[in-house]
Amino acid sequence: MNAIIITGERSAENYASLLIDHIKKIASDINFYSVCSYIISNKTTKVGDYTNISVIGIKEAKNVLKEALKLQHTVKKTIKEKNIKLVILIDFPEFNMPIAKFSKKLGAKVVYYITPQVWAWRRYRTKKLDLYTDLIIPILPFERCFLNLNNIDKNKIAYFGHPLVDLLYEKVGKHKKENVILIMPGSRNSEILFHAEVMLKAAEIIKKQTDRFDFVWVYPEHLNTENIKHLTEKYEFVNIKRDPHIWMDKAYFGILKSGTTTLEAALFGLPMVVAYRVSNISYRVGKMLIKNIKFISLPNLILNKPIVKELLQDEFNEHNIADAFFEIYHDKSAYKKMQENLKNISTALGEYPITPKIAKAIVEIL
Image (cartoon, rainbow, N blue to C red; front, side, top):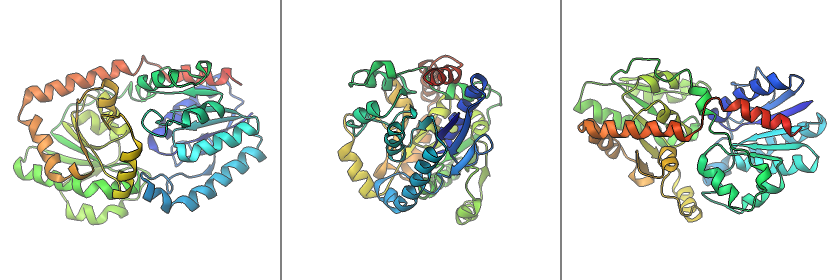
C-alpha cells in the first residue's frame, strides 16, 4: 500500500522519521512517499522539498506562494497517480489543509498529526479539520482539551503525548554541563534573517561583561554556512556547531527563537530567554487574528505561567536579551527556580514511549 507523509520543518521531519520506523514494524508493506528535506529522504520516495517554502509570516509567505502552489500540484498528482491510500499530514497547515481536502475526496485515509494551532487563531479551521480527516493527533495536552470542546468528532481525536519524549529519551543528561551559552535563531532562512544578528549582538554584550562563557550557535544541517559567513566573520568568538541536543544538554543558558526548540530545551532543563520577530505587517495582522493567548513560548503555554522570559517584536533587542540572562545569572535562586519549573514540562508531555501508540492508532484506521 502506498502512503505519503508531508512535513514542513526540521522538528516535524524528526517526528516523521520516528513514526515511519514504528509504522513499518507493524505494517511492513506500506511504501512511503514524502515531502521532506534530508532527514527522511532515505526512508521514503521524496517528491518535493519544503525548505524553500517553509517561512513564518504573511509577507514572507507571499514571496514563496508560487513555489508552494507548484509543490502542492506535484503532491496532488502523486496522490492520484500513485493511488495513495494513507496521507499523513504533519503541522504545516497552509500547505497541508488543501491536501487534506483533496485526499479525502479521492477516498484516502487522512491523518493530521501535530494539528494546526486552531486554539490560537483561525478557529473556524476546526470544522475543516473535522471534515477532511479520519484521525486527528494533537501533541499538547491543552490542544486535546480545545479540540474536544469545539465540535470535532471525539472518536477522531487520539492523544498520546508529545513525540519529543521519544526523540530525547536517551539524550538527556548524557553530558557534563559547561559554561556555554547556546544561540538558536531558528531553522529557516527567514527566521535566521530576523533573529540571528540581534542574538549575536546580545552575546557580544554578555561577553564584554563576563569572560566566563563560550558561545555556540547551532546552525541547521540543511542550511549552507556560506549564507552566514558575514556574521561568523563579524562575531568570531561564536562557535558554529551542528547537533542541537548535545549543546542543549551541555549549555548553561539558551537564547532561543520561539518554537519547538524551546520545548526541546525545556526537556533538557535549560534555562532560556525566548525571542520572536517577523515583519511588521505580519506582526500587525497576527496580533489582530490571535485571540486570548497570553504566551508565545511552549513552556509557558503548557504550564500556563511565565516560566521563561519572552521578548516579542519590538522588545526583541540585544539589550533585553542580555538583561534577561544577567537577571538569572546574578540570582542563583531564580536560575534554580527556572530549572525546577522546566522539569514539570516532562511530566505534562506524556509517558515514554509515545510514537508506537501513534503508529498503532494510524494502522488501525486502514
